[in-house]
Image 1 (cartoon, one colour):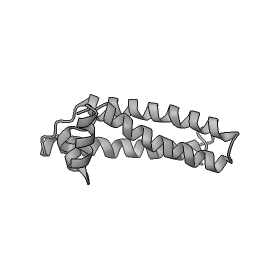
Image 2 (image 1 turned 90 degrees about the vertical axis):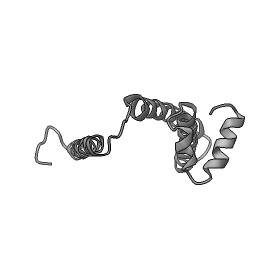
Image 3 (image 1 turned 30 degrees about the vertical axis):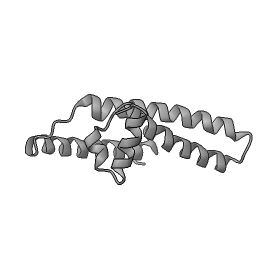
Image 4 (image 1 turned 45 degrees about the horizontal axis):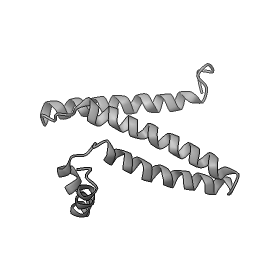
Length: 120
């Protein structure tokens, strides 16, 4: 890396900055041209909370299974648990409306299950 103070982390920070600029341009364009109403809570706060919950659960799953099974298997299991926990957190936090869930493959079935357990 040309700047020794930043080192190899500069590539990661540069990538994050690039994606933030692209995201900002896309959101600004969507808001102007499509009149898209994106609430900060629904599209930022709730997914960040779900990510935090997923990260904690995955980390502790990894630590729990690390001494019992191999490191690779503990990592795979932690990732699988993370996927399930994130999905459940997104549903519990109601990031998606019922109409948006209906657009998913098998959306009718998903909505019926969520209605039975009184989430939607």
